[in-house]
Length: 210
Length: 166
Image (cartoon, rainbow over all chains, first blue to last red; front, top):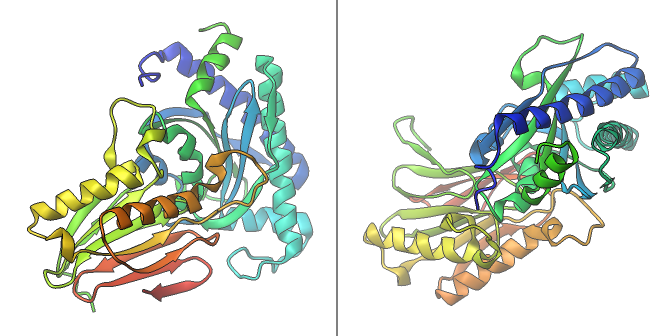
């Protein structure tokens, strides 16, 4: 399979724009939700090996809060919203007004978990509806699932569909950070959009770069 | 205990490798994937494969990475161990992984890939008459595993249940 070989720099720009528009809407939604300033980095679109993918966000063993959903419809793929524990703690503490809340301290209170789930719902919803408006494609997200675990264990579920045809993944990666943190790669939150291989054509066609 | 002089061989996703005592072998962040250890107690040699998918017939690619699949991967690992002078009939197996990281009501088969991986690994072990000595599979936690060929113990670390050994 060689769907990668057909991808030009114009295609990459289109994918970058998708990450830009999607994450900008999601970051705005997050900012409204938390009532704080959220910064967003320029999206990266990369073709990486599975192992390189596992090493993002501080490595495959790094414990993160992960929201995962599948998207179905005209475009299929996997979407992740991954937050380092400290960042997720700050967001949820602000949301439920409980400074003792800690994802690292199981059993994690149900209220915080459901707040995180709802945050995932809102953010992925705004990302994907922006994407759908932009492309005119029908996109149906599944209900997001939540897991607090090793990054590698979480992200690998998004590689399953791709792994049927490839050992590489095209990832649309946008990172966000809030104003209370130092900026470094391992403390940022990330949106990852991993379109299934067969879906790139639909995206490119919709945006006139097929 | 391990001394610093000993090396830890790291195996990535959809990869495999072989280790000899006193070194150990390790793979991290197993979710729905399954880590399979094949080992020869007397020779203190072991192989580890990080399996992603149950069956190579699922592959739609021409260039097949054999280590990605349970069926082709286990066969290839046995061959790799044979090159190290291990007899296939001496091999035993320990496996870990195959979790379901997210609870879903989706009809997509890929959502319950963990249990399918575990099942496929067991089928392939049976086909090659390799006894499965111990397993820590299923559940919904990620695992990092490390095998020590000297003790034949598999060390398993999870985020919420700490460390165990099988």
